[in-house]
Image (cartoon, rainbow, N blue to C red; front, side, top):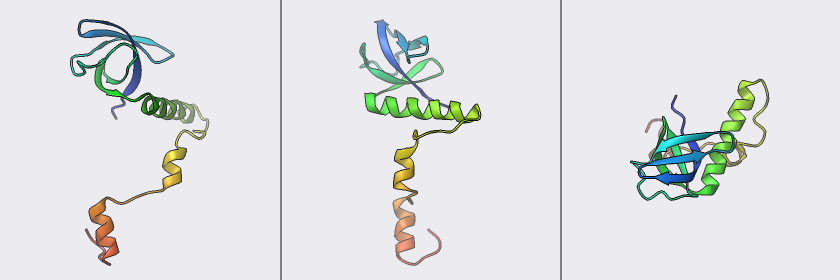
Length: 106
């Protein structure tokens, strides 16, 4: 499984940036996110920023990762996934249309 980690850019030097997530600091590659600026949150994977993300999105992802850490340590996820639990499961539009039409297959 691949997991993207949100990090906030603290300093930029060319295509490299020093970024932090609150617990750690890392040197990341900004080649794929040339518009990223100091203070921006980026979603990183294997030392590379993949996209600039909104601060709220970064906080949701960070909460989910903390919840997974807690579960792996034998704890509970708390309310980290409350937004998902509140809306319940949904079908892709083509399957919902098939269900609404009374078909058992898409």
